[in-house]
Image (cartoon, helix red, strand yellow):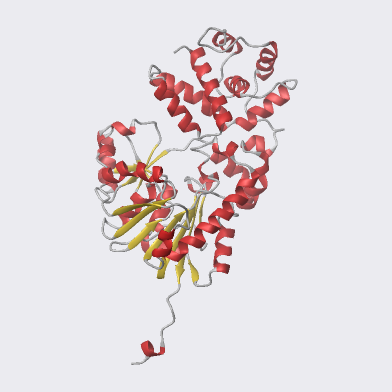
Length: 446
């Protein structure tokens, strides 16, 4: 493909992402499946153009508004601005690529030429930018980020706007971290142990993961370090009955099975049977044989009532805004609306209220999100404890010392991981325990 054809593809995909409000990864992947002629260099160039815009959309919109006379903003204009401010193209290079050929973008309008000329010599950041434009997030979410991060809000927004590394979780069922690191090195991949998770290896460069023997043999799975820690803090042990209540495609289910050493009973449930079905191949590859998949009609499915009080561990990775994953999904922030925070917080409360029924006396309810917002995290737990006095909050540092060991990233009772401070996705974990019933007089007599 010519540079112009790559630009045309990127513009079409940016408009589709905006119109459909669907995950960019899915839309881009579907495009490449339909256009097999696009080689690896074409795919890299097209993806690079798209994510240059998605990561800096607010700043690009600010520049377009500042440097044009009311020029409408769309995927084409954003990409033209990104070519100048982010990718370092010259006006002449843009003119040559946008020549109106059948497979290339239409000729530049006079307004577009004027915009490109006005952007010459500028950097993407400007001292006059408001916080939302500088941090590249929707303006409405600024107060939420300030409540969550305080004086570090700008620093965390900047960190969330960067590119995420590739984190790999070593599958304890088949290997240990050092042996996997050696195996990856033999395949030409340099992986570095991370600070917090004893199972995490981090890769900085892009790698063809599916072609690696290490991956095909089930020795590794893709999982952010923060997500790995959430699964480890569940303290799921061999022989236990454990349920991953919002299992999705099974990433944490796999991690829990490995912690249980494939002994016990592990249920993966979700309201999407399709997502659960996608976990089949991953479970088989990892050698996780103790998993029972249970599709639910809702979080209040009758199945829950039939299994009240029967699980040692109930893991709830709740649906959330996903603010902590903006590095990986920069388009997700633009699909959010202010109403989503309240709606998701209400849904999380309902899910917790249902899932807690499954916890046996002395068992634990683990609540996790990939969000930074207090409305979805600390406030959620505070409300739950007020409504359910039969539960107590277990301090994360104590669990950490018993299960993970080494330096704990928090001294607070609940764990909040952030990208700027911990170099993980934004993540939250709270561990709650159902109290044992008081001993009866008969039990207390000698």
